[in-house]
Image 1 (spheres, helix red, strand yellow):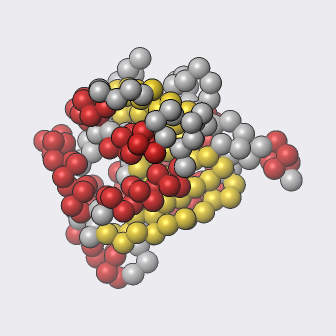
Image 2 (cartoon, rainbow, N blue to C red):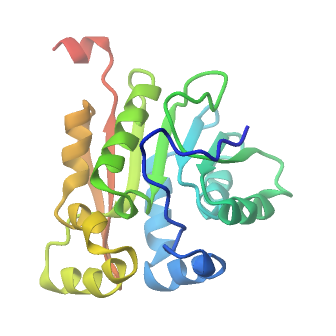
Length: 232
C-alpha cells in the first residue's frame, strides 16, 4: 500500500535530482557523472543478495538497483520505497516484465510500516542520505535499525568523506551546487559511519571508496547485533 505522507514532523523529500523537472534525466545524469556501473556493481557485491533475502530499498529511485539485484539473485524478495511518484512509475515500468518478487511503493520509509510478512533481512539505500537534513539521516538509520532483526545488515552507497582537495572541489561544484550545502556537508565530513555506530550498529565499515567526477562515493555496512553481542 502506497503511503505518500511524510512521517510526522519530518521534512518533505527532494526529487532524485532535487528538481522534479530533472527526474526524466536522472538515469542519464547518474550514469554519466557518478561512474554508476562501477559503484553499483560494487554495491551489489557488498549486498550479496541471496535466494531467501527480503531486501528493503529506502529511496529506490527509478529502479536500476532493483534490476541489478534481480540479475544477481532472481529469487530475492525486494521492496523499494520512494516518495517520488514519477521515479516509482519509471521503476515499475523497468521491472514490469520481470518474473520476480519485486515491488515498489510510493511513500516514506518508516519502521512503523510492514513491508514484508517478516522483517527484512537487509535494508539498503543509495544516494539518498546526502540529500536529506542531518536529523532525517539519523531517523532513517534509526528506523532501519529498529526494523532489522538481530544479525541483519544495513548497507548504503552514498557520498562519504571527501578527503582530497580535488574530491572536495568536485563535490562542491556538482552535488552541493544541486542539493545545497547544509544537507550535504555532513556526508562530506564523514558523518555516516558515526551515525551508524551511534545508533547501535556493529562492525561498521567503509568497504569501498570510488572516485567519481562528482566526488567520492563510499559503501558503508553495519550489522544489528544479536543478543549475545549486545550484552558483550
